[in-house]
Image (tube, rainbow, N blue to C red; front, side):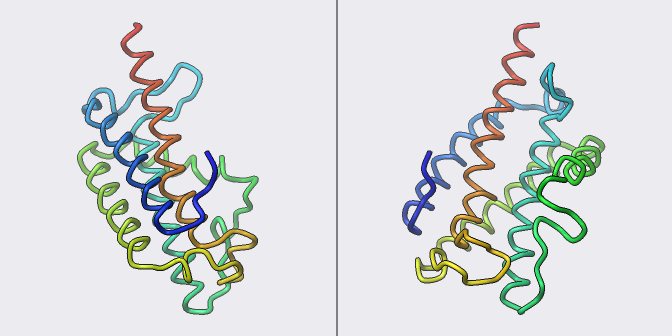
Length: 168
């Protein structure tokens, strides 16, 4: 799916992917939230905590850029090729948490990101080089990666977990 190039496209992608993920999440309960696929140890809880965390990272990067800070992506002390190690702690911590709390935190993060997108024009979202940490991506592309793209991959993974659970 091609990346959005305007606020309206980004909001449409956001709403479409969030609606799909929300429908899938409605099928998950406390018991299934702790399940994973046969080929990946990541639980549904872990996936949801991960998506929430990465929306938070987006705002950390953005706010750091606004403040003129030296923003390090993905996180201080980590390179992009170290994401497996970085994400492992998120997954582990999520597995000990309550499903309702994780969903509530995800909803708050989703609401915040959608409001941010809706409040900013193309002049902010799609200007190349707005902040040094963005590299060649625009702020809108980073928001898309933290939101709709993550919603899509979470939905795919959770549906796979649910299908495998039904097959057993």
